[in-house]
Length: 239
Image (cartoon, rainbow, N blue to C red; front, side, top):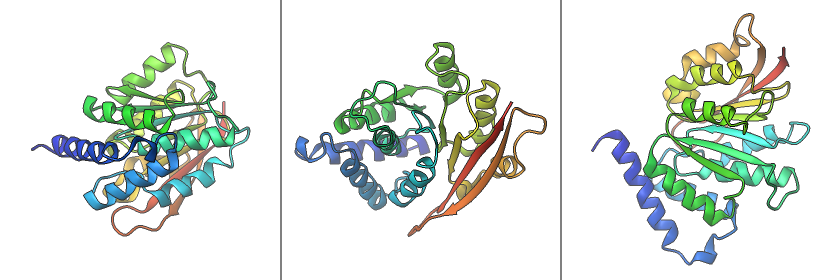
């Protein structure tokens, strides 16, 4: 099996595990579902954004004022982090089903995207969390062209796909003018397997002469194994 097929096989096993339970176990309970997904992921060695990292990211997102309403995610996989983002944005905006609170998550694999949609629906977040299939850069451009993402309209961007795309996709966000002063850019796996070009870029403040400048912080979380750093970069100016 290829690496992609192994990743999809684990996603299918997770789907079967979650939906083997009584529907009311997780229906409309996003945090219970996220914890269950990550417990299974730990046991199956799946790369998801684990609970300690979600909490670290939440603390950073809570600092954004006014409360964030739009988050884009590069690398949706089975939807665990997207469910968490949707729940966090709803909570911060005191919304049960706010149509103006949106998470857009990009997933290359149709198999994984379908599983993510099912889990998002189970969590009761289908009106908030939207899964787009295909290359992330293409999906981002489509959202911008359709007017679903506007200049200065992205409060949080989360990078958790293939690390070699972190920097070009961040720069695409910049080129489209999606950020505002105070926006947060969060990246996983910068310590392992590592994203050296991306790290060098945000640690140096961003593109020289560019529209955005960053201040960045490497936040260490507890981890039994694997990467433990969450890189959080804040937009400190926009031009």
